[in-house]
Length: 372
Ligand SMILES: *Cc1c(COP(=O)(O)O)cnc(C)c1O
Image: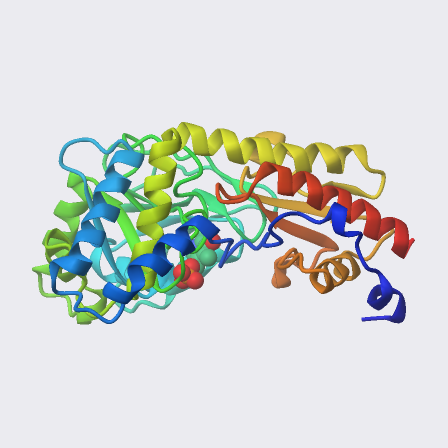
């Protein structure tokens, strides 16, 4: 940091109550940590094959079914390794041979690479759009359509819709699940990790699966394809039905995710969470539109994410702003490193208080004034 940046100290009365605005891992609610602290002595360090832990897996699975209002026949399955492992698992256990991908940022393009490199799959069809926008799927001959609900690297939210009644639709919802509504008739497998909108910790993947997705898993996992056991969704399915994982999960991640899902359900469900995120993100986008030095990166306001707000800066160094914020306890507002823009990226997940977002905007104004 330069001498100027180093010497900027934000007035205490401007500071948000909680300074965590990262897009993942994201803010974990203090209330959830308190419950965890109380439960931990008789929970952490106990067997994941016993009811003591399985009850929390069951609480998480049924809480998610309620949150997403899943129709009869859908199942929530889980396993270790986060979304990145789920992509590998999907390449073995969900894609039969051909897939179409919408690629519009770092995360959606990573799944494309997984499929391109899989020797047992065909070259994927890839529909690309520039960062800051999103493409639409096109009906094709493929057996699987791979969508992304919220591209966390750019702050773009896509609407999830089925391009073809025959193909399986799978959607990466890592930063959307629990914050943005979706229609289960448009998707077959809605998968995510809980360290973003679900305010838990990393290392786990979760997937809400339709009967068609379950049927696909059962066919592929009982066929002749070699599938590593930890990426075999058939094994994950049978373990999930017993409220277990194939191998040892992080018990803390499960507990904190279940706490968050219960909190959202008790507060008014997905509609409530989406409204709250819309309120928080609205504060940032309106603030940026009113400033001469800032503007929302995503041009089409309907594609602007309600949970990951990307704001471009002009005439002031965004890295300097995030460095000063960090030195004052407001962390993880840096832009996605590979996007290479003069930008801040601010998460407004359900755990974040709208009042803290207001405070953050006032802090940025203060920093810009001082840097100027
Ligand atoms: C963070 C993220 C991932 C990667 O999740 P991991 O659990 O770290 O593997 C994948 N997709 C999206 C959309 C993400 O935001």
